Length: 153
Image 1: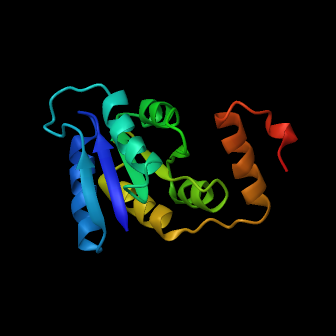
Image 2 (image 1 turned 60 degrees about the vertical axis):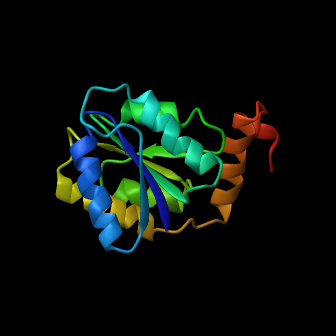
Image 3 (image 1 turned 30 degrees about the vertical axis):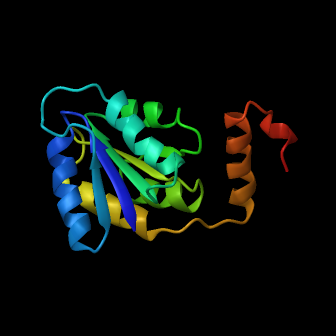
């Protein structure tokens, strides 16, 4: 799978370690943005990763910042992106299975590296369940297009 990963200065170490692990599992990983460790504003790497999802040059994206919150908000502004802030294996599974999330947002400050890697493994290994959830994802897309989701079947 082709993955786009990005981080701000607080998430750079966790992101680099995760990238190495994912490459070891056979994924193609692109690191997006300035991952030098110097201070950077989280909307920049969030946009770079989200844009790769939007233009389909990457299959999935993973973002890491201090809390994960800012990355999630910024990434969700890009058309076609469904970014989810995840804190454990259950929310990783739910975000993929029910919401068809295509960008995973993680907290470098609140999660240890082992948990970050386990969450990513579960998230990448979970498929969208479809069914009743498809209608809900279509409603999310309707909102993105300025439409009333109540009018979407």
